[in-house]
Image 1 (cartoon, one colour):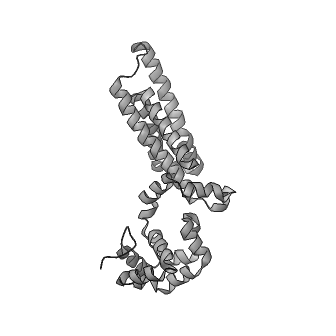
Image 2: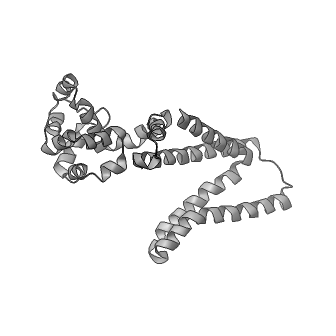
Image 3: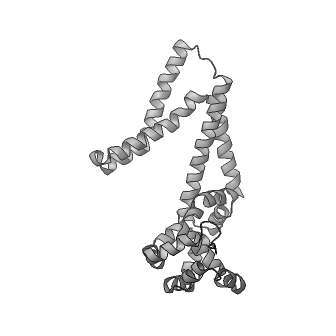
Length: 234
């Protein structure tokens, strides 16, 4: 998968970059992003939308560049441009690896949220969706969204009589499966396609899915259905 290769290369780049820079230089970027993000949400009412957006987007870049220049001057004047020690390289590599992994995961999430038509060619999105990297992120993030998880299970069993009959042995599954709102979703080919494609944006803008989301009683049944395998405990 091209997506997995690119994800591996990006993460490898972050790891090597952290090893080369050491702890102090590596941590500047993440800290700058965290500080500017916290400042944005703290003063968003005073700054307004455009200034807040500018602070969120350009703030980390300006702050990290400023600190990096000051650190370079300090290192040249007082530390004689000494290379980072081995433990500093290890910590820098670990932090950069975690930070880079988070950035790659965030990018995959954003690509997963985009509608299929935005890619122009279905093959690009299919490569992303079917990649190991995306599945790892999906199982860690999207799969924990109980509504989408359970809808996917219901969709998978809709045309599978034997599997459907076995799952309907559970009271919670039967109650959800035969609910009029769920039957309406499963009978709509477009909605079922959105579920199978894991098109989160499409599902969030789908009226039938939103009707389920806003039904407190039905959502409680979804939570009782089970968190991981789509079946409830008997």
